[in-house]
Length: 485
Image 1 (cartoon, one colour):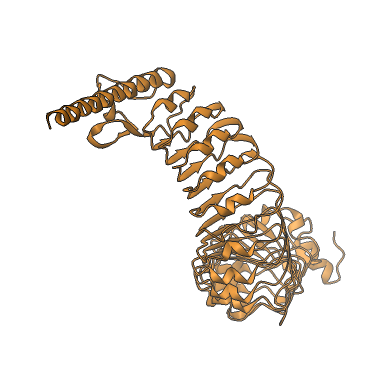
Image 2 (cartoon, one colour; image 1 turned 180 degrees about the horizontal axis):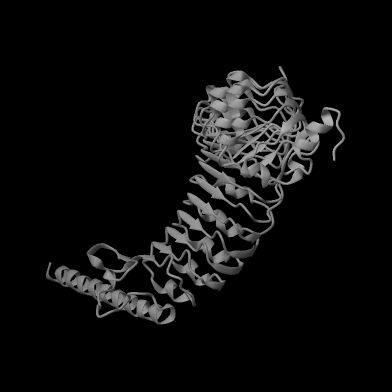
């Protein structure tokens, strides 16, 4: 009994001794880090390092477990940080660190959170970071890293947040990324990654965010990313993806943003898109998508997305007509349908899209008159573009109520009559284009009109007055049969 008590006392003393030694080592390490980096507020008449800015300690104010030195404009060698053996969280983001990422960071076996983003780190990603088996979040974005994603990372089985965007990484996305069962966020946008998106990505994890914008990725959009139904943000713009948007996109009821523009996608928008009740942003611009294969119209299924804020179908091959009930999406702020093959008339119901900020319908085959109801969209401010269509009739005086509108383009149609004086109510206009129509009469005296180039009014033989060189007096005399003086 006495012997066992002595053993317990000895072990307790040894434990305290080791603990005290570890504390002294942490303190010495922090002082050395301060000498190297010059951290503001460190060591100022206070030996209790647990109270220093950006430091968090474990139970009983013991060893350093968290180090947040973000946004301090620091530079220097960060290798010494690897001596803080109990560190669980390390944030060095938004500084001016450069050179290679120290491989010694791979020795921080307790590390769960590592953020080195928004620095100037270069070279390859150290394979030693693959030893951080407890890592849940890794952010290396916005640096100058090169090379490939290390295969050693496939052992990071606890990884939930994996961000490597805005670097110069090449190679392909390894298939093992799809085997990370806890992965929730994967962003690798603005790199030089090629090959195909792994066809198992999202099949075993509840993936919520996938952003691979601006790479050189090819092949199809994998069905696997919609398999678990948890995806919330999908951004695949500016790649070389082919094929169709999978019907399984309808599994993801919480999907708020789909951006797949600037690829080589074809086919139709799946009917199941109407099941994505949380969708606020849908962009498929600059592809070769052809519209609904049944009716040829803009797919009515998308009208089920009542929360939609932005619909961008521009520069594709959509045909058919604009749905009369398109404004059932009452939150719509951006309706971008330009450069397609849309026919028919602009529905008068367009005036019910009361929250629209931008309406782009240029370069289609629209006919009929410009609906005066567009003048009811008082929030319209970024642009109203109806150019390069087959619209006729007069310019509605109601458009003059759009006092927030910055850009108006109705060029290259068959519009006739005069430019209404009510257009002087467009107090925010900066850019206008009335060219190549059948307009006549004087250009209203209105600063934005007179400051516009002549080309904004060219191709209307009946227009006169500034900024055109033909004065209305001479023009009217000429039309009445008198020779201009």
